Length: 277
Image (tube, rainbow, N blue to C red; front, side, top):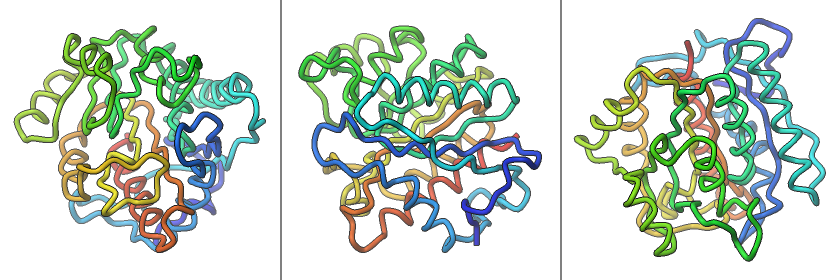
């Protein structure tokens, strides 16, 4: 079994896991702050070996930095703390892997990684566009995270898969900048061609999964992907230069079966395997 709870940060590692238990801007159902702990707990029941990738976590050097201590009522302070933690990863030469938490936590991480890798591209798996200019007048919201990212990265350096919810303005923006893609085989091939040899930040909002197999999320949307679609995506990303990544928006208390937490932990395993140098 693989276990995220007993990994020594002082030992050599290539990937550093950082728990970010924050859900201060969620727009529907809260609870993503409990996601990192649930993923760690569920990881203890999952094998280290991925038969689809033919790879084993036993050969991956990763460590868990634990959860950040965050002031829940101050989003700007939270983002600053996350930025500092990811800056430390960049300084130490390790890949940051954040366990959320809501999707806004990706913003300072991508900012930090972009500072080191100015040719960075971002691949987003999500049910929602997250391209609003603001949400109820608030610009620092999980509903606006990709709009904030595009302001320094550029829309042309973002690709979004699994999107099935958004405003008309968001869809117009995504169509104008051709950020939308799909999980069809030809589109995945085109995605890899678009990435080429550029560094990638992979952000996975777990509500990309259909709520039939992943009900434990704050804003579920019908019409999502299943596990096998995710694995096909992971397989094609295996040779990409992944320099940062996150898995966000698990709200474990919304799925009393615990199956959402298990699926999230299995996603983390696959993502660790493809991110390993």
